[in-house]
Length: 293
View 1 (cartoon, rainbow, N blue to C red):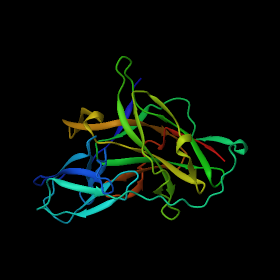
View 2 (cartoon, rainbow, N blue to C red; view 1 turned 60 degrees about the vertical axis):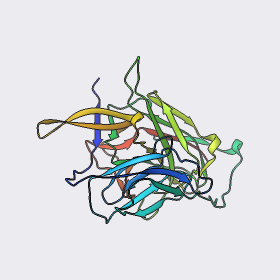
View 3 (cartoon, rainbow, N blue to C red; view 1 turned 180 degrees about the horizontal axis):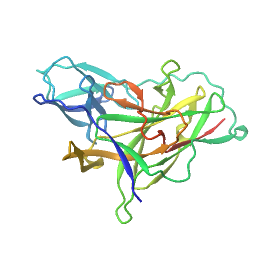
């Protein structure tokens, strides 16, 4: 069986290189923050810290009119104007996010009905991944009632090896909807949901997180981690020549639906969500969500 993988590539820059290096820690207790996201918003490039909170980000732009963006689940996003005389040995402190819960009406669990949205039984033939210049990809969902409880998600990812299936580690984000832009907005879960797997199908029970959907619309997002563990080297044709590139697992199922509207969104390092481009009637991701309402 042939699989088609869509790669999300960056634009090219022809400038000298500058390295931003340092460590990301909590301002509260000075503990390291593993896998925090660090990016340059204008240049739209980024990386992730390693398990020890250490990062190195290579910029191809010598200009100083850019901004570092540093983020992680459970912390306030931080913006730092670029200063070329302060590019190495950075210690970036993030402030813990104090979650303020909106007042909700919670039904008894034994009176709730359960429904699975965007359900699928098998993986498609097409997948989408990133070369490291897109941070997240999100699937839109709509429930039957306000204050539904998200209990389970199912994901199909590319993993075709039998003896040595593809490995990956990534994070799940759950977002409310921006009712004006129709894009993902605030996190609905302030805890880290991290998946480390070799499986093709991922079934994740979310009962322990008690994720309530305040309105009827929400997003489930895949957050790629740009770390060596997820890196896959390959080549692609550019103007007839083989060009080496690196992509990052996981590759998520990309479903063809001729008459459907686009329901997938993507997030770059400029921190702006935008709808996915439509290719060959690809409109949604192989992600299902089960909710109780």
